[in-house]
Length: 305
Ligand code: DGL
Image 1: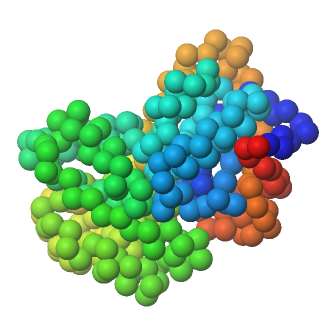
Image 2: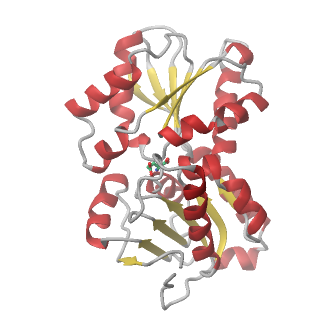
């Protein structure tokens, strides 16, 4: 492992296999612009979504170890794949609190179903993620503990969505074709679509258009700061598109609220540090697809031994 020469100020650290986690990082930074943050994209080993459990767990431990040496107060696993498998073991091994996207996201989905006209146990969820996330069954288990009925989750792995976003081909005809490929057999009675890969929020417009036209229903995307209509056509109950940052926001907010005022103040010095594990120039170019906030100079680091 190589560490940066300068130790950062107290911070909240985010990691992903690549740049998708910037969708979560950006949502938090929009809310708290001067929060000190670190972001690590393990792009040398991206994608995680087609790898196996032991490999994803090892990569995630190495990222957490990296941040534990760099003043992180809270580690955010801003990757659906790593969150599906590694967070519980990281929570056992590291003294720093670690939060993944699964619990808060499932809570958010359950709360939308609670607010819908249907009884929560009748509500239907469509889960879109990487191959690994979908095959792990982790979201289904977590939804079940929140009363979402067994058999009410339609899950689909959408691996091609990831490179389409990274290649800035979204929205566009290829993104429309990928929606057709993956979503044509989604049941019509779905209430909530969970974008369980942190790359997927950038496909919101394409997914919203496809599903809005397919089902003739309005499609609404939930945000931290209020809902946005993605597809206005059609009648009937809206179909909600959910991304994971609302759950993470709650965890970040709770972490900061637990700090004494003087410690909390140290987290707000407007320091941003971004690291990747390969080709920083290309990493920075792709980062622009995911966030309009400046990422500064991206430092290349190595993880593991
Ligand atoms: N951002 C990752 C996730 O949320 C997807 C990319 C990958 O396969 O590594 O699962």
